[in-house]
Structures are given as C-alpha cells and as structure tokens.
Amino acid sequence: MLAAAAAHAQSWRLDKAVELLVGSGAGGSNDTLARTIQKIVQENKLVPVPLNVVNKVGGNQTIVRAYLNQHAGDAHYFDLSNPTLVVNHIMGMGISTQHFGDFSPVALLLNEYTAFTVKADSPVRNARDLAELLRKDPNAWAVRVSNLGGTNHLTLSLFAKAAGVDPRRLKVVVFKSNTDAITAVVGGHLQMVASTVTSVIGQVRPGNARIIALGTPRRMAGALADVPTLREQGMDIVVSNWRVVVGAGGLNAAQIAYWEDILAKVVTTEDWHKSLEAQYWEGNFLRSREFRKYLESDYNQTRAIMTDLGLAK
View 1 (cartoon, rainbow, N blue to C red):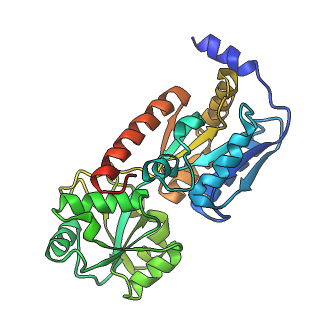
View 2 (tube, rainbow, N blue to C red):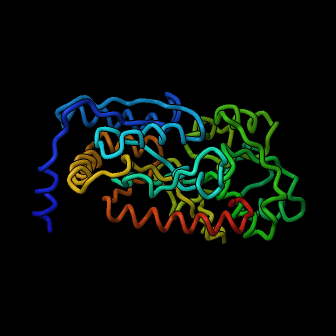
View 3 (cartoon, rainbow, N blue to C red):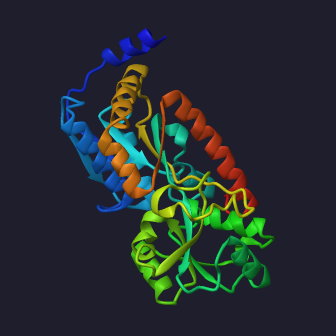
C-alpha cells in the first residue's frame, strides 16, 4: 500500500505556480499560517514552482471557495481553511450552499482553542465564578466574540448551557477587531472576550488582563501553564478552531498524495514548530483519508451543537 501511494505521488507533477488561498486579510492568523507554509516550502525547495499566497476576502470565506472551485481538478489551487467550511453550511448563511464535500480534503494541520479573558482586577476569578454570575443574570456581562457560530461563540454557548443558562439570553457582542475587543475589556467597557490566545496574550503578559479558562483538551505549556482548562473546572467543553488545506473538487489520488507528502514534510520542520509555539497552536497533522473522517465527524458534532443552541438553519 505504501509503495502504491508513493507511485501515485510520483505520477503527477506541478507545471505552473501554485496559489495558496486565504479567505481573510493580510496579517490575520490564517494569513500568517499561509505565509509560514510558503516560507518553509520555498526555503526547503519542496516544490519546483513558486507558491504564492493569495488573499480573497469576503462572504465569510465563501468567495475564496467559489474561486477555488472554478479550478476543479486542478491541484495548483488550495484553500487554507477553518471551521467556516462546515459552519456556513449548517447556519444556512443565505449566501452560499457550499458543503465541505464540494472540495477535496488534503490535510488537517493544527487545532486552536478558546480563551476566556477578563480585566486583571475583575471579581470573576475562574469559570465557576462566571457560571454563578450568569446564572443570576445572563445579561450581567457583555462578552465579545468574533463571529456568531464560530468556535469561540460555540465554546461560550456550551459553557452557558453547562451552567444551566439559555445561551440565547447571553449579551454577546460581535467585534471585527480582536485588538479593539481586548482593549475594550482592559478599559472596562466590556466584561469578557472569548477569543484565541494570540488575540489577548499581548494584554495578559503585562498584567492588564487575565485568562480565567482555556477550552483546550489539556493545560498549555509555558506562560499559560497555570491557566486551568474548562474541563478542570467541571465543564467538559472542547471545540477546535482547526486549520486545514482543501483543494478544488475533483482532485485525483495522485494529486492528493503529492500534496500530502509535501505538507507532511512541512510539519516536521523547526520553523513549523516555532510557529506553533508562537501562535499557541496545537499541531495535529492528518492525511487526506483520516482528515475526511475528521471533517465528517466535526460536521455532525457541530450541527448537533448548533441545532441544540438554535443556530442551525
């Protein structure tokens, strides 16, 4: 089987520049990840042609995927994607009927999780304090998320439900800018932000803000080693903001095998591991077959959660 896979990978070759597509703007986490991959691939000469990062913003990442599928069967175009790949279809966004099955799964790269962050002098010291406060008054705190139905919003909603609170009664504020959100928390204009660690760490390190819980499977290392998980505090909640690579629909086995092998090399490099550490990401590389199963499972679990929360179409 290994010999057959190797033969497949060797039976297809690149013949023009590659586009690694990003559905968000320059400087964001997906853009940072894409440019890390670009740097590793080019510096290690993993492919014989240029690999270009192309940003196509809009439509909650549906525009970039529409562009991708204009190149059906062409393995020179890939989307560096996140859970909007499943959430958009579940929510019935009204702007697209895209389903993850319309694309060719290549590899899962990493997982990222939610942090609940408050102002340093907040009376809420941990997740139990937060649960008690919300039980008394679900509108007592304004909590920021980046988008409804996203990983951070789902983590917050599951937390509320576990605390015995209707998630729909929470005072949720949508901020487009993570920087503005944590600044509002530090300034006392917003009580909490549910976000990625990288969005708040700049205010946590100098002591202006404090993470009260992480939605991770286990404690993180380094500067966050003392921060307890939601699981430790009695809430068995883990929702991943994963990053993946998908191709246009119709890629064949040889094309997928080629890129599986390239990405398998990327994730073994020192630059890759430095990037994971700097961004507080958890590496979790899965090849196409396992990644497809992961997507199917994630879609079903996310749909069940969002249906229960009243967020599914």
